[in-house]
Length: 166
Image 1 (tube, helix red, strand yellow):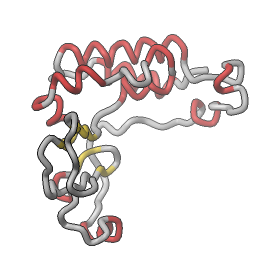
Image 2 (cartoon, one colour; image 1 turned 45 degrees about the horizontal axis):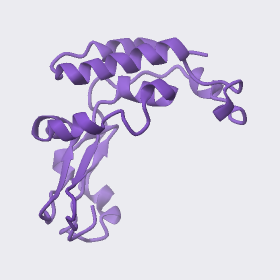
Image 3 (tube, rainbow, N blue to C red; image 1 turned 30 degrees about the vertical axis):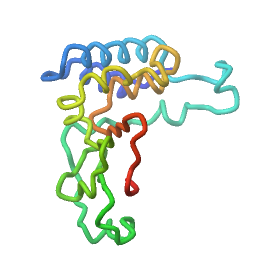
Image 4 (cartoon, rainbow, N blue to C red; image 1 turned 120 degrees about the vertical axis):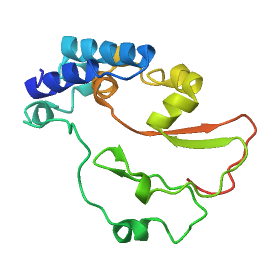
């Protein structure tokens, strides 16, 4: 089972310019895998009790540009009044720097939006991205690898202790 709109978005994402070669290769591998297997069906052991047909049949497209208006007042109830906490806010899947705050940084703890992490912690991101749930084993991981635009990277060095929640 495959969704044609999803496949079009997957192929477009796999050809995204401006990314490091290793990231583009991961994205292409995710696109290839998703195109080959599509959404899981109830014939797949892991999905025998859950139909993904309602998702596959949706006529939705990935956002090509950031969008959505969110005011700081709208997220205030979710920050628990703690200015010292690191807060990363994503609007429609995109990091919003104006609504986010670095908070108190602990030694050995780094929290970055994905794009900055690829630049500043490339070895860390490269070592872990796509390894916990390999795209070749999971159609949704493959779809995510192909389509993801942004996210957060939390890197905690061995024996480091965060001084405040993230």
